[in-house]
Length: 388
Image (cartoon, rainbow, N blue to C red):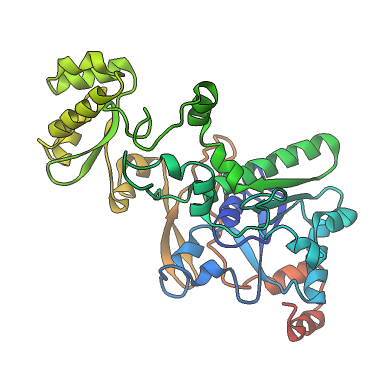
């Protein structure tokens, strides 16, 4: 596998960091998930299957769990032994926490100059917001995505997915791979600073580019790609379901208009202002004449980008999703057979693989410590001291 032989020490919790390391673990990296004695908080959040949380199970497969108290001397000693042999460290604490614990990049690099050390945080390691608390909703608000999401004249709409969190995870994974590649050339590791707010801004090259060029502020429900035009919008159907129309290219718009018998709309494809508002109302009236299923049957044989808005139940049963193997089943020691999201990156010669289910809390603590050279007596002592 592409990352076979790469060892990652993962100190992150919740969603962004674990999502990152799961991607890398799927491609063969050995990920040691370091958890505080109480475990990753996501273990107790959200719906549970039997004992384990669905949230935790979703982003922690192919990893080993080590319980470690980093505030204890013995815990820090174990961490530094891990760091000495590791390729990558990923942490998601607020800036300054790792320094206070005595396990910052500066300290680790002294014993392992080849270490690639990544800090994944909300606002980054510098700037006036570096120590501000935050979650996905805050980052997409400050980063501009929330402000342009929703209908004209209506409040902002919270997206269904965690844009900042998962973008941060993807950026961290990409950054770590760039770090590994650079190390192949230089022989040295380096420090990586990934901010989720930076990732949010990276979603807006079109709107920010337009604003920087023209000075026109993109507004909710008024732009080409956020609901301001008839050709690119969401429409309700006769049965209260919804269809999406993405006829940006003139030939798609022309094909759509001809299919619904409205050739008169073709010429006004990108006519702005009140004409678009009127066209949106007219196209909405067209979609209200049939059910979602009827529209699906019509468009499945036409060369027009028009697709239904599906529920999650429908998504995981969709033939395209199943064909792409984006739903997988694994066996868990306490939960039995569980379904998980598949792997979105497809490599022809060195594909990813789900090898092990998400670990139980501390499942591999003794195994990992024995691999670091600790004796059974030392492990008992560390456990008695509260270090593990």
